[in-house]
Image (cartoon, rainbow, N blue to C red):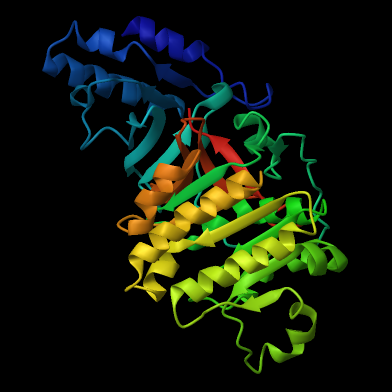
Length: 382
């Protein structure tokens, strides 16, 4: 105890000016080694002495332990925090759980974090905020001879340059994940195609008005490019609020809900071929979970359409991104025909993007507020 006391007097806080009185800050990494040599009464006595010395000197002490039974949680300890790790597929997930933090409110008792690049960094929930006051034209990343860029350099790097031309991508969105997560990930992909005179056909979810999608696209790219290289199929019936926008959006919005699925699919193919004839390459995105909801009696036709659409787009060296959710028939077909299967999942309130087939990456997805257009900021889980 004398040795510990003497050491306390010598340890200084490096973050305060030298002219101020030093305050001891001790990280007791050898606590488990000490407790292995002591019985329970001596462990409690040692903790009390250390706490008393710290209180006397106005300092702090952190007990690092792999055995929570080595601490007197109820009385002496002001804060109890555990760090744990688990695995999703081959990916590491780290979690900080706050059991107790005296004198401080705990808004989130479980927080995901990463140690990528040797840094401790927490994962934040996805922000729905897009800064429409600070608008910039999208800055595209050039496509290559055999690869379509995703519009995000970090994602391109993990995909070895981007998506190969002729690729089929399936995206599974877990039920707990807000569909907004799709916006900062794939809007840059659409913008990256249109900005380079490549075609982009978006077949939107039919429970939403098409303006709910285009508001994240149209402000950030030249209107001439939009009118020539962009199309969106979906629910486009006007309301009083929408009429003032109708002239500027009518050229690329196509009403898309027919009485039966086969007629709807024929319209998709027609619009795709029209767009394909104008460009050197084309992106197509479609949410098949809402297609299933709309045409519940035509599941077999929907499954056949997935296969046919896949074959057509693959042979044209274009890019198809299909979206669905767990427990939908379309998901299993999508996974079987796709070259890359991605998944959006929730982990302690944070949205994670995982590459399942093949296993390229696991990222926390955050909205980048500094770009001036919708874009994701990816933080690697490690």
